[in-house]
Amino acid sequence: MEAWENPNARADYLVIMASREEVEARDVSRASASLKRLLEPNNARRLKGKLVFGIGGYDADPRELFEIPEVRTWMRKLDREFPYWFYFLDLGPRSTLSFVTFSLCGYDKVPGGKMIHGDDLAAFVATHFLAMNQLAASLHDTEEEIDDRSRAISGFLFPAE
Image 1 (cartoon, rainbow, N blue to C red):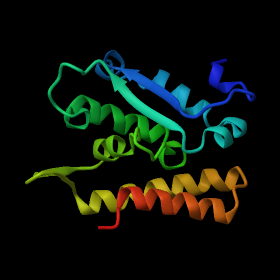
Image 2 (image 1 turned 120 degrees about the vertical axis):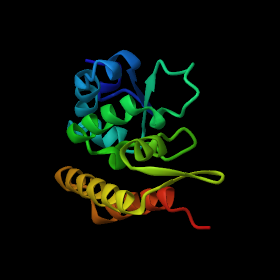
Image 3 (image 1 turned 180 degrees about the vertical axis):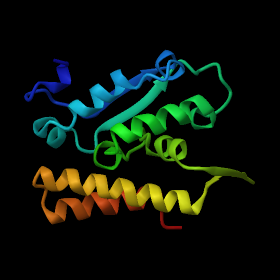
């Protein structure tokens, strides 16, 4: 049992990191097992909105993590096993939701940055809201809790200009 799994443990946020070695081996088993332990009801309720997820070992690579083809492939594989990012990811200053989104969607380089393909983003949002809503319903979250989280996710992904 990890320390964060103790029902009495206080958690402001939880960092789960995968390694470059896991990515290069195309092995999502460790990350998937850690993430799936979040689905246990007591863990899920305590850690909702507190997850920071990352991949270590690419510090010397000048590309953004989501620009690395092996990372994108690995993230797609992990996402098939754990599509509950919207329920768990922190949305504050250390949020990794942008990393997850860009890793799972096609994008183009545009002046000043990158833009996700609209169809990919629509499919990503629909799929991940469905997973979040199914998990929330299984945990007996209230409609108000689900709506609040949905608004927070939407505000993060589609900030008002």
